[in-house]
Structures are given as structure tokens and as C-alpha cells.
Image (cartoon, rainbow, N blue to C red; front, side, top):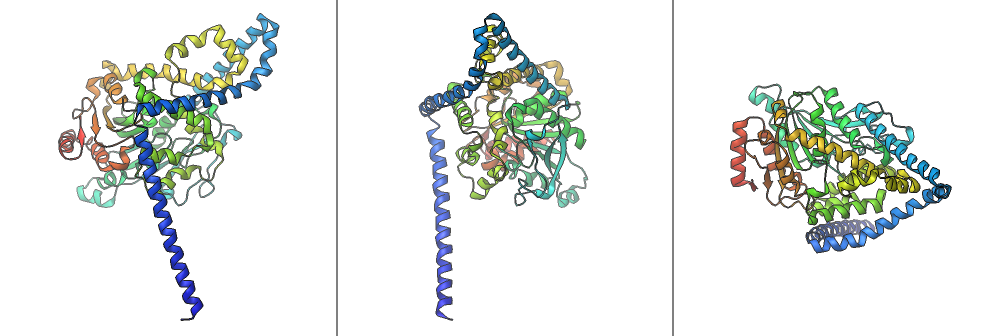
Length: 485
């Protein structure tokens, strides 16, 4: 072999070895950093320090955003009472416009303007051709934007095995910041058991179109999306498995669906439309950190870093997949991530429902620009809807409409652990599944149980099919799989 060819081969081998070592080392460092961040954030004192650092920065940025409108509208202050009334009227007009937009999205009559949407066409920019299920993705339209969902058919062998051509469909709903990929490890077991699997990408996530302006993203938009999904697919007696914000949307949507549409609801690390009083200081602080971080970074938020903190053991391929929906789109395409996080009430209910209705507050809001306070309008609307939702799920007269519920949480959830107790207290006992009347913990699982405990999650979902089997599975799981009630 010529000397120069031998040198080239040796150089190529050395380069590949160095690249492998570098990649392995970087993954080890990132994993270690994830575990370290998760450990550090487990201390209330550290969370408090971070809030003291981030909150002033967020408020400074917020106050700067108020300056242009304040300068423009300050002339009205000098006019006197008539000018003040115009500012108050400006606030009321904007709030009414926001509520009208939300109602239009809820009934499906709203249409996004071209500048409000970044369309994701098949096999083009933002489609993620190399990510899973590109060919199993179907779509429907909501308010002029394309919503994508994945439909995976039950394995042929499972149908042959028991002779049934049709099993209960299972619909998966993801949270924020995430997409359908979050459920990937749960699917195989359920497909092998003979179930068709569906999973929706909310607008702004996954392969669905990206909404570019936060002001036109409302909880009502997502509620209508879920209603439209069931209309398009025609599913009946479905099992819905919902995580994080997916569960919140499901709890708000199911009361609007025909009784036979959803028969079982599997709630995994999720919540009712939130209230500040639902969680303790420890968990509220982390929520404030998330609120401030999304407000400060916006489109520059490294969502892969969030997943790394929540689940440090994620592989490089998984991290890439979670970041993929935003890898080749405008920064503003991440508006939905920020909108979700800023829909969580940041102020007490007294402020949202009483203080905001005073003339003094409306005057300040009108002076500084009502659009800058749009998040509070959304929070107030979601909080009001949350009151209705809690009454529905807690009412005995609605139990006859069906929809059995299981509440399952990872016992190491650093973000919303308190909501297990909130859900099980608010939901009528007759709705709770017999094998977990007070909900169930998955031991040593965090906010994303479908990552490290996918087998347990899939088994619990499958246990809904036959009540007796479900009881047996749950009892066996408690003994052997790290679950406890």
C-alpha cells in the first residue's frame, strides 16, 4: 500500500476516534450538567435566589416595553378627566377585542392572518423529514392553520392473535415545551396490544403550523383543536392520555364533547387551569423561574436545555428530536412556548378579578398600552374557565355521563407535584378509577414519566380496557414496578 494512502487511512481513523471521544465527552458533560441542575433546583433556597435574580431582569424588560405606549398616550393625562376616560375606554375595548378573538377561536370562526402563521408544508422547511412518523402524519384545519396528528395502526400480529379487528383507540396529548415525540416509548406496547394510537401536535408545536404572535394564541384555540380532532376522526369511546398542558386542555374540552366520545381519561403529571393557591412556595418558585426565563429569552429559549433539566438521561438523538420543530423556522415560531407559560396566573385572583376592574388599573393599563397586559387578560379568562371546569368534574350529577379518570404522577416531579392532590380532591370520587381512588405515584419518576418509566405508563393506560385486568395489573405494579397510591 502506498505510504500516502496509509497515512490518509490512519488520519481518518484518528479523526473518527477523536470525534467519537469528543461526542462521548460532551454528552457526559451535558448529562452531568442536567443532573447537577436538577439537584441544585431541588432546593427551595436556590429557587428563591434565582427568582430574586430573574424577576428584576424580567420586570426591567417589561417596563422598557411599556415606554413607547406610555410616551404616546401621556398626552391624554394632560387633557384631564376626558383624556382619562379615553384611556379607560381603550383598555375596555382591547379586552373586549381579546375576549371576542378567544370566542371566535373557540367556535372555529376565526381565521389567522398570513402574518400570524408560519405554514409548515409537507417535506419542506420545518417538516422534520428525518424525525419519526413523517409518513404517518395526517392533518386537519383549525382557524385556517394546519394541525398535524400522528396515526399509528395496531400491529397486524396483535389482531391475528386475538381475532379482533378493532380495539379501543388511544389519543395522546403532549405538554409544553414538547411535541408528539414525547410519547414515543409508550406507543410500542400499546400497538402490540392491538390499539390504534393517535397523538396531536398543538398549533405551534411539532409538525403543526407555527403561530408567530402570542396575542392570537389562546387556550380556546387548543380546546377547539381537540373538539375538531374528534369531529374529523369520528372516534368514539376513546381513551385520552394527557400530560402537562395536554391534560389541562383535555379537562376543559371533554365537557364540551358528546358523552360517548371519551370514555377514559388518563392524567399524567398535569393540572386544572392553575391557581396560585394550588401549589406550595417550593413549586411556585420554579414556575416563576420558568415564567421569567421564557419572558426574557423568548424565541432564543433553548428548549432542549429544559428537557435536559427535567430528564437528564435523555440521549443526544432525543435532545435533537425535541429541538427539531424549531430548528429551521423563525424565532417567533416559539411564541406558543411562551404563551403557554404566561397563561399560568402570575397574580392572585383578587388582582385578576377585582383590582383589574377598577378605574385606576384600567387607566394605567390604557396609558401603558393594553396589548402589553394581554397575558393578564388570558390568565383571567382561563381562571374563570377553570372555575367552571372544576365544578363540572366535581359535580355528582355529571358522573353518569361517564369518563372514568386515573391520576398518575411521578413522585419526583420538580414542577407540579402538588397538583396530584388538587386533582384528586376536586374530581368527584365516583369518577376515579377503582384501582387508584386517590391517584397513583410512579416512584423515581420526574415530570416526564414517559421517558424513564414508559413501561409502567403504557401498562397503566392499557389497564383501562378491562376493569378486572386493570385492578390486577395495578396491584401487581404496586408490588413490582415502583408504583404506589
